[in-house]
Image (cartoon, rainbow, N blue to C red; front, side):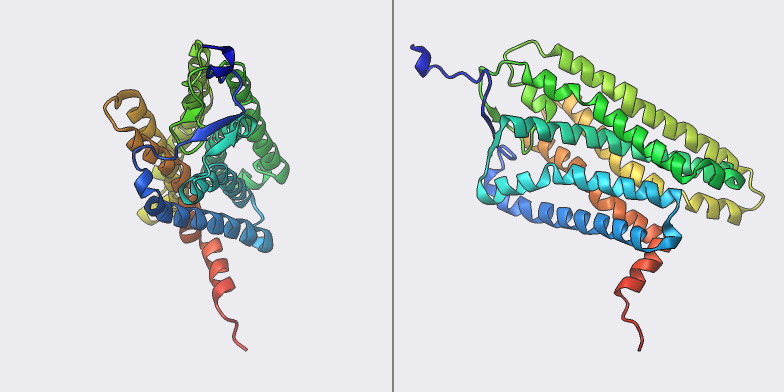
Length: 315
């Protein structure tokens, strides 16, 4: 066979995204709840950002961290869902190589950034409950900005090697990705090379970033619970613990789908591919949609301001 007729994807100009393989006939039906969830995520997170910006009483550490989380959710969901919907609605499956790597980087960096924001919010709850008299002196605007910058830089720098590692591989098998976005492992599995360094680096990120965040959150809440149980009355304990409910729900919305997805991918060898991809889509969509709902309902200041926005003023 001549060189001109050989299929060679050493540096593919484009990849082909299949969406959800095996469920192509149901793509239109699947797109309806996904589109609704994405719309709720965008509307909810923009509402959080708008309310905090417009309401001076919300200009404090807790709400600054909440705005950072809302922005992170917006970017993370927007990195994948519009392309997914374009596949479902318009059969727009092509994505060029550079765009694929860019999408991969944004998904990886902002998902780790989201974990870091939840760890920062756990620190905020720890200081508010365990050191309430020093809250305003510890979490100054400068301190909040430094914490936010540290989370952003950590995520941005540590996930930067991923696209460079992926770019250096030859792709001689196929350029078809059985997914709705350029996930890291979905792409490197197409490479005709030893990809162990990517697997090892992924495990390093898992333990050094996500693992550290989870450990930090667990320590914070251990100290918080110890402080709560020392309160003299049951009502005081319940009221204080109630200030943590929103954050605990946000943590659950992020880590539970991620944990389920990781366990299924590692141990569910007989699980159909389309089910794995649906689980991944839940991880991409549920936290950005749930977080503004949780904080909008559970946080009195935001809920009251939201009601003022949509309640007609009496003349």
